Every structure is written in structure tokens, then in C-alpha cells.
Length: 223
Image 1 (cartoon, one colour):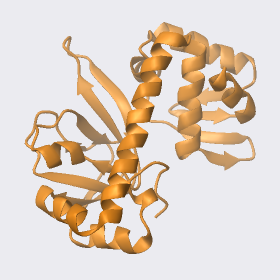
Image 2 (tube, rainbow, N blue to C red; image 1 turned 90 degrees about the horizontal axis):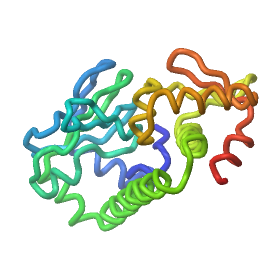
Image 3 (cartoon, rainbow, N blue to C red; image 1 turned 120 degrees about the vertical axis):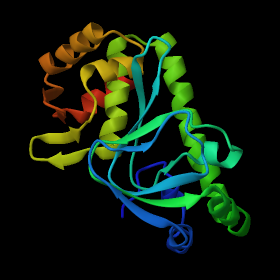
Image 4 (cartoon, helix red, strand yellow; image 1 turned 135 degrees about the vertical axis):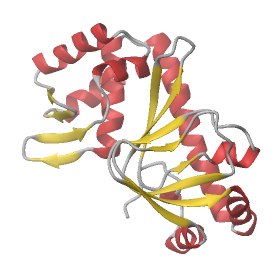
């Protein structure tokens, strides 16, 4: 398994990974299955072994806001499990996904007995906090083109596949879902995507983006 960048398992040596996963129950979900439901009780958590999932919440007007993508090595539901809170988000698989399910008690025991795992949790949560802060600042300070470029650059780094045509991003998000994540309208995202296509930066298809000029995309994201 190659853990996703910034995930808990990416910060753990092999022995700590094996110790954490050994005590859990392996579960397999098909594509588009619910792993966690918002507002449910939280006496367990998942560690993703393979596959990718989307994290979402329901807004007051009934719309679903998809705000995160998690992959191999990520932990799902650790905060709710540690505090005994109800789930604050729903998690649904976007492709066949395998997880190791741990009870809250098992997870807490690992943190007490294995300081490296506890430090890994802190590091992975710090990554999420930093991402949230960047998103908050970006929503205020940057126009939609720069915010979209930054979003695509992060997806490219997390799950891009180099090919002869460029870096392929298999994304589960529609333009409307990307717009919700960026706090923009679908029309604005469509215009920004069209601008990137016109400049030869990327080519779009159904749930797939090919970045032909990753250097330009990264530069635009940094502006």
C-alpha cells in the first residue's frame, strides 16, 4: 500500500502501521457505498487500506456539500470516536474500497501504547487544519481561476497518474461539487475550466482531467 500524502499511515514506520491495523476488522465496500452516516453514533473508525472516498455534509437547504477526498492511509471518524461525538459528516466510497475498522477503545489504546502513532495522528490532523485554513483564506483572497487551479493542483499531487498525454486525475467530483467545495457557482467553475482548456493547460472528460501543462497549473495556483 502506498499511503496518500498527509495521511496518518504516511507518517508511520511499517511496524507501527502493522500494529495499528492488526487489531481491526477488514471490511470491503463496493463503489458508491456509505461507510459513515452524518449524525450516527461514533464508537468506531476506519483506516483506509485501498480506494478513495468522499466526505460530505448536508447544508441547511438540503444540498450536499462534498468537501474532502480521502484515500489510502487516511483515518475516517477519528475525532468523533475519540470524543464520543455524533458523526459530523457522511463518507461514501467513490470506488471499491477496503478499510480496517477499529473500535474507539482499540484506537485510544494504540495511541497510549504507541507514541509514534499518536504523533502521526497529530501530524495528519495538522495537515487537514492547514488545508482548511488555506481554503478559508483562498475563498476570501483569490478569484475562482486561482482557487480552481489550487484545487486541481492538490488533486494532481494526491492522485495524479503520469501518462504520455500528461497527468491524469480520475476525479469523482462533478463541476457542481467542485463549485460547492470552492464556494463558487457552477457557472463560474465552468468558465474557469474553459479558460484552462483554452490555454492548453488541461483537457476534461467524464470524471477525468488530463493536465498537459502541470507547470502552468502549479504556477497559476501560486499567483
